[in-house]
Amino acid sequence: MRYVLATDKLVVQGRCYKGFPLLVNEGGDAMQPAQSFLWDVIAKGARVSSPKTWDVYGRALYDFFAYVYTKKLDWKNPAAPGMPGAIEAYRDWSKGTVGLENSTINNRLRVVARFYEWAVRKGHIDHVPFDRVTVQTSRQPGFLAHVDATGGKVQSPEILLQQKARAIKILTNEQIPICYDALPNLTHRLMFELMVRTGLRQIECRTWPQKYVFDPSRRKDLNPGQKIRMNLDPANIELKNSKPRDIDMPCGLMEDLWAYSVRHRQKRERNNPKGDKFPTLFLTENGAPYSKDAMTAIFAALSKRVGFHVTAHMLRHTYATYLLWSLRKSKTFEGEPLLYVRDRMGHSDVTTTAIYLHLINSLEGHLVLAHEDEMDMVFAVKEIQHS
Image 1: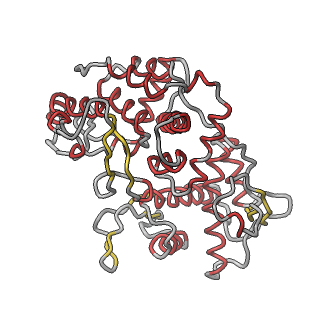
Image 2: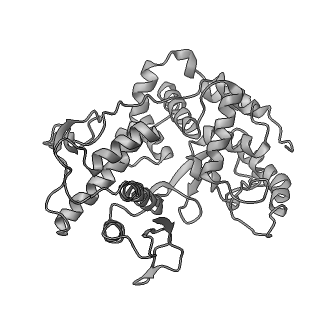
């Protein structure tokens, strides 16, 4: 059994399905009915529209069926009395043998549960091999809470593991320069600064287009210390759900990115063994774009050097937390801070952004006070160097 992603040659009714997950059996054919399920939810469903989400669905099903077939389990029929069924066995193996986090297992189980419900509708099985239980969610009420008759209660598959809400982790003002100084590579330092000062996701950072970079000194409408409003277009950069948004780029950071582009990036581009050209600003030493695994390795190594845990997503949380704090304390900002941060982060729902309100209310003032000024000072003294 193999898992592959379709190339741009997969075109159906004029639409390209590059990145479509393909589950292939030992004979080289599509593994049914799992492949048909993926086609239904991806090609026909409006909710699963992003190739990144396609991959999540595909890998969840591949992981489940690879386990089922390896263990020679019957996914269709219920287990014998007193024995775990295919889903329970897969869940317990994921937890006990592989050691995955409950949240990761639950995300995969939700896809598997959705597959079983689809299989019932299509007549492949008579009923799903699990019950549903009513769960009270802790999600903050939204603007339409007054018309929500559910009371925050949802139906959830009973096969899911108990999952505690993870506390949001951010870096303090003291930890940010420590991390920056511990990055020996110029490219890595700039990626770190870009994420912590603009709230970019790691995939947005590593696919940041070179065409977005310019020399601020040639723009007469810009002043030192000013923020540059930039529109992120999914046609140029990988954005979640392909949703465009605006971010505010510090002028000094754009100056550094421009200097990197004209001095350092060209050298890396010339190191590509095949002479390939890429649109992304940041390139590895071999002149190729950074992968997700490469970014994970960078932050794992950084964590070891500094002695505390650091991830790319922590930088995004850090940016949102400090930005919301500073806007709420500002006497000159006009507008609603929560909505401003929502738009900069690209959240589809303001209730997602509201999690940072609860965080800053629990933090001591010295952790966030005057963050913007401190960050400007931290990065202002950094000069672009060759790594």
